[in-house]
Image 1 (tube, rainbow, N blue to C red):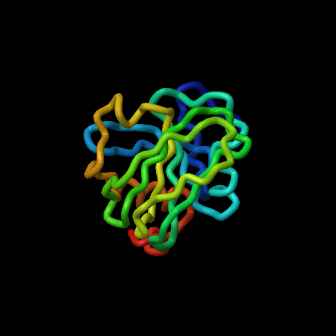
Image 2 (cartoon, rainbow, N blue to C red):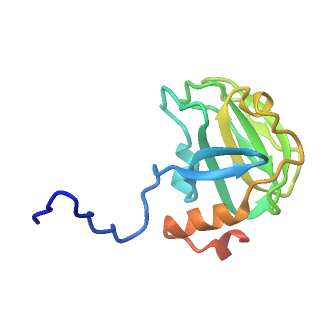
Image 3 (cartoon, one colour):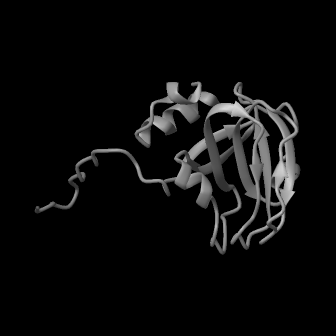
Length: 154
């Protein structure tokens, strides 16, 4: 295909890849997140990543609320994890330490979203219990990845 200078490339068709970062608002902060939606994506998470940009992370999206359990197998980055209920409200934040295979469980049994960010990101940005994820942005990102938001309570 010949593309002349000044012409726009055609829009890509099909869903965006798993490593695409979406803008997501939490509280007053805007971050860039990858979505971990499938079982395989959630199992891999941020394993083997050597770095993570300052305001970037991974949002784990589950089809139904439950108590959640995370650990850091093969993950060299110091992270924090925030657990959110189906209405997008932050309930808990915990540190995750590199390569630590001890499980960090939510106390809340109705967690539908989990957000991993660089360690101390939540506290340094004033994101505390009660902060809200913009669920419309999550729904849009799911659609762009080729998933139906309704399957994830949105």
